[in-house]
Image 1 (cartoon, rainbow, N blue to C red):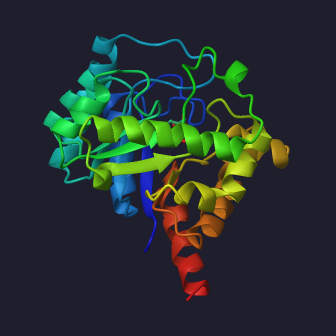
Image 2 (cartoon, protein in one colour):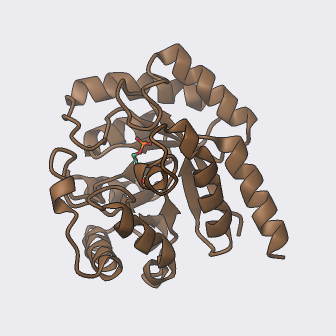
Length: 264
Ligand code: PMM
């Protein structure tokens, strides 16, 4: 199966990897149109920054950033994902047209999230591996066996979702690269995605322009990490992942096409 390309639309003034380029409504819509023209599969709209050290914003601020954008994207016919940890934001986004809920906390940040997803069986839910909010995630990056611990912690999240009545078909898992993980943890997870797949759920990977890529190629600029991001997508395509979350749709769609052709 061809991996899906989830295009990132950060409607935040301080996202770590695109420098808040898409903050204004008009900019967000223009960027979305560009992604649609590049055959994006899903547009992931996020209003709250999760960069290390980020301070949380209010519910109202998050809602006012994302809902008008989602309403407009629905008009444009896009497949929409809401990147939020708040069940009430997810609910408003679903009402406005989102069909995916991308929760970087995997349901840990808001006890109402699992129930909301079970009450909306048409929605797909991405549960990312997470250990705590951005203000303390670096100190939580301590593992004996990162792959086994991430797998087991995701399994706990899945159990909680199923207990709340979520249909297994709704669930997609994500190793959460960069969230309570140092560079080596991220590489170890990428090398062992097959062990996470053993949980039996589709896997989404968000490596795009993240710092661990720059560390290896001695680059501090997020744009300079683009080539590395494309290489990661090309190599992961063969391993049967469900999707990639990325800033540059065209390059990743092309990489997937080439990788699939080579592995025929
Ligand atoms: N990374 C970020 C935000 N949301 N969601 C999922 N499912 N997976 C990720 O890896 C992920 C995410 C942070 O990156 P950004 O600031 O570039 O959006």
